[in-house]
Length: 166
Image (cartoon, rainbow, N blue to C red):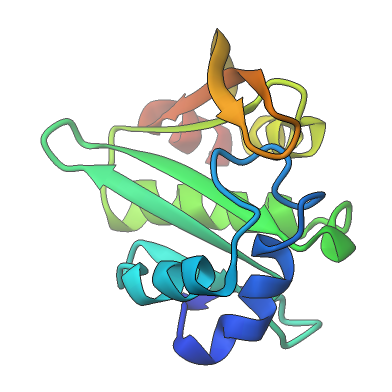
C-alpha cells in the first residue's frame, strides 16, 4: 500500500492538497501548485510515502514517519483524498506505518496528532492500538476555518504493539 512519492504523483497529490475540505484539519494547505511541487520534491526517501491501495492501483493519499533517532521514537501522519475516506485505507496505512516503525526501525514509541474534532483520523489511531495521551487546546491555526484548533496527541509503545500482536 505504501511506496515512495515521485514527481509523477503531482496531479493526485495536488487533488487533495489544494482542496479546502480535504485540508481543513491540517496545519498546512490548501496548497497552490508550487507548494505541492515543493512538498513532493522535499519528500524524504524512507520517511514520506504515497498511499496506493492494491485494489485501486492509484495514489489516494500520502503519509510519513518521522523518527527522532536520539529517543527511538517517531511521529506518524497521513492524509487521504476525501473520496477514499471510510473505506479502511487509513486504518491499513496507519497499521503499516506502526508496523514499519516497530519491526523495521526498532522504535520504542510512536506518536501521532490530529485536530481533536477529526473523528476519522483519531479513529485510525485508536483502531491501531494508539491511546489518547493529551489534548492541547487551541494549539494550531486552522488555515481553512481561520480559527485556533485543539490538537489530540496519541501514542503507542513497542511493548503494547507486540503484546497486542501476540
